[in-house]
Picture (tube, rainbow, N blue to C red):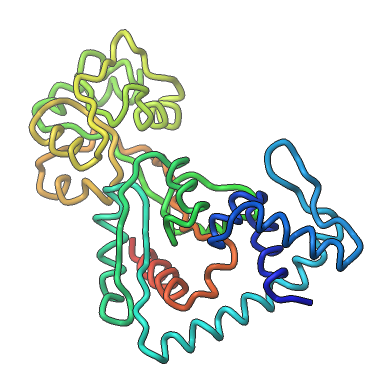
Length: 301
């Protein structure tokens, strides 16, 4: 059986789309369609059900993918090992939210630069667009809080992020802590808010988890909206109002007293970060090395 046909078949099986597989393989969509039809004629059985949007594998297709994919990945590992032995440089393309990339991911991966790696980072705030870029082959590795579904991606839990309700000391002094404990978010009425989006995503999640309610738009309006958590932190430090921030980002400011935690719930809100790659791509040695490096570093996050 032609290995080229099998490679194309596995790409389609993982991508769930002839078009997406064509992009990843560097082929035209008609070429991918032709190769799949050739393989189906050779086997005498259909491998995919054609749908309005993409394809789904038949039982025969699933069985063939289960048998063929590990061997194709093993061949890719052999090829990659030969490339590394020859001293070929490989570029790693990483994408994710700018704050997490800058403060967590890039410092961890910097140790790999000079070990056969070059590094390119693409800060992106839209999780869906980031995963679309991974699917299209624009990125090799993505960090995101969105847990992707489907066979195209392999997602590994990386770390949990604790969220903290913070404000500058001036605003913190105006908060009645006893009232906050008894009445919840009502004790914060009138304090301005800094957020990353008009929809108040971080505040909404925190209010639901800690105060068992949703923000009241009449009493809690965003006075500053900026799509970068580092900028949110600086605005809070400057006295613009309260905000919900990940602890990894604001711990130094908390330790120095530049900002104050307004609440210390027994069970703080958490958000999980995932490390996402295209299924099968960890056969690439440089990508597997970066993946392992991030998992090792995340133990200390």
